[in-house]
Length: 182
Length: 433
Image (cartoon, rainbow over all chains, first blue to last red; front, top):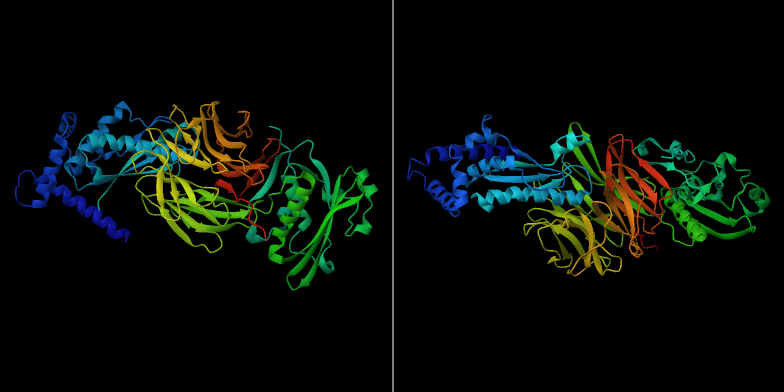
C-alpha cells in the first residue's frame, strides 16, 4: 500500500516535471496540461504583488525540488520562540516554493507545523498550526491554490532533534514542507 | 530542594516480573504535621502468604496523601489481628493517633473476605469496621477502597485512592517510535495499554462517568482526529477529523458535549460539539490561538488558553460562548488549565523566567501558588477529591509523572522502568455500586 503510494508520488512528480518543461512549447499536445497552466497563470495574475514574486522564480521547475543547489531543495523554515511569523530572510524561500506550486497546480504540499517542548502540549499544537498557516497564507498570496495545500500541526510531538536546550529547541520550532501528490 | 527518601514499605519487592514496568512511587519530599498512624499487617489465611500485602497498600496510600505518616513495619510494637489483642496504652506510648488492624480469610479457591477495623488510639475505641469480599485480582482495589474509608473517616473528605490515571507513553522500539495510551490504578500499579500507535497520541480526557476516554490520534497519516474509546470494551469511535487541528477534547460535566479545538475555519478556535448529533458551535473568534478548553464543574463557563493579549494566558467565557475575561496576570505564560472538582481552583502550567511549573490559582482570592519546582513541568490534573495534582515532569531527560498535594506541601514521583510518560489525567470518582 505504502509502496504504491510512493510509486504514485514519484510517477506523478515525474509526469508533472515533464509537463512543466514541455508545456510551454507544445500547445495542444495535452489538453489537461494546457488547462492547468492556464489556471495557474490566471491565479498568479490576480494580484500585482504576486505577479512579481512569482516572476522572480521562473527558472524553478519541479526538478529544482530535488536539486541540492536550488533554494527549494530545502524544505524547513525555523521560527522564534512563541512566534508564528515567517522571518524576513525566509520569505524568499517561501516564495520560491510558492512559485513552483503556482506553476504546477497538480502538485500538492502538506505544510507541517511544529514547536519546541516547552509549555503546554495543546497550546504548542496551536502554535504549530499558526506557523503552518503563516506559510500557507504567504503561498496563497503568491498564487498557490488553496486546494494544493493542507496544514497539520504536530506541536511538540515530533521533534526534529531530541534535546532539552535552546540548540535543540531552535531546530524544533519549524514548518516542514512535504510534497505529496494524490 | 529538601529531599527525604522514604522507602515505601518495600512494596516494590513484592512485584512479580510482569509488573516491573509498573510505575513505582518515590516520596521526594516529606511533610511535617502528617498524622502518625499504625497499619498492622493483616492476618493471613491459614498462615499462607496472601497475593497482596493489603496493609502495605493501605499504608502506602495514606503516606502518599501527605496527611498521614504510617509507622514503619519494623517499628510496630505489636501485631494485633483482632480487637481483644489491642492494647491502646502501647500505641499511645508510640505517639500513634490511629490504628488499623485486619485479616484475610479464604472463602473459596481465590476468593477472600477482608475485615478491617480503624481505632482511635487516644480515646481507646473503634471508629469503624468493615468486612468485604474480594477475588485475588481485586485485592489491590479493595485495599484502595479501605484507604478511602480510613481517609474519609479521619479527614472528613472522600478519599481518591480507588481511582485511576490515564497517560501517554512514548518509546523507541527498533528505531521506531511507539505511542501508548495507558490506564493504571491511582498508585501507578496495574498498567494496561488501551491503544498502541506508531503516530502521536495526545490529550486523553475522561468522560464524567469514568467509562470513556477521549483522545487525539495522528494515526491517519498527516491528519489529527479525536476519538472516544470505551475503557472496558475497547470499542472506539472517531468523533471529528477536519483539516488542521482536531485537539484538546474536554467533556461537559453532563457528558453530552465536548469542547474541542479546530482550525477548520483557518485559525485555532474553540468549538462545542454536541455528541448526540455532532452539531458544532463555534465559541471563539479572532486571530489569536484559542485552545485547551476546560468546563467549570457547574457547566456554566469554559476556561481556555489564548495568546490574544500577546502571551498565552487563561481566559474564562460562558460555555455558550461570548465575552471572555482574562483570569491570569502573573507570569508571561499560563496554559493547560484544570478545574478542581469544587470549581474553586485552577491548576495550570505557569511559565516564568524560562521555567515551566505547576501552579494553582484560587479563583475567589486571585492568589496564585507555584507548587512544583521543575524546569519543564506540564499537564496538571486534579484528583477527583481535590487533594492532589498529578503532572508530567522530567528527570534525567526522561518524562516521568509526579504528584503534589494541592497545598504544595507533599511531593512524590512516579518512575517508570522505560519510556517517556506524560499527559496524566486523573479519573473522576467511578459510580459505586
